[in-house]
Length: 179
Image 1: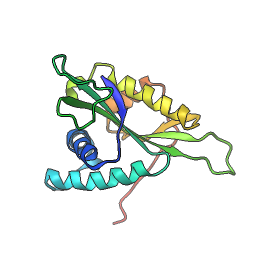
Image 2: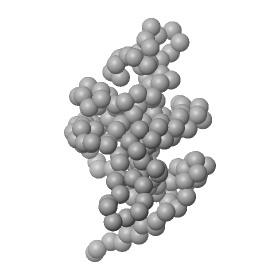
Image 3: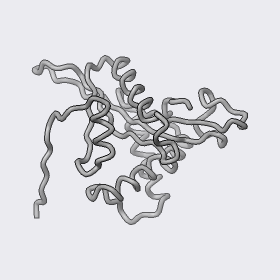
């Protein structure tokens, strides 16, 4: 299993959106009411996500990572093969961005973990831990002194994972309807 940068190219983004991003958000929508998805065909989700993710990856500081593996009998190296190679299975995703500290404040820049997902067949394999290790390396590479993330309070599985990773509450967000 290899964790690789997600390149901002059409075919890689399309595969990432269809095989990782959309399943992640469908699962999240089942567990967390606030993540209900629009009633769109899959292709519309993929199209919208390709455009959105390309913009994010082309901005300084935003990075996407995908975990890929190949079966033992496949003649492909997950470390070097294109993410679009048909013998690769995409198994996880990590999206990060830098939250720079404004000058008046005395805190380090933070690397924000925007999304982290492991395909169901690979849960319990340690892949989520490896993706978090990748986030830590990304933070060091970008000169960030802290990791930050948002997690839905209804997402108990994610909350338990992040607490196990050493994350602690930082802020509390509150929302209400304007109606």
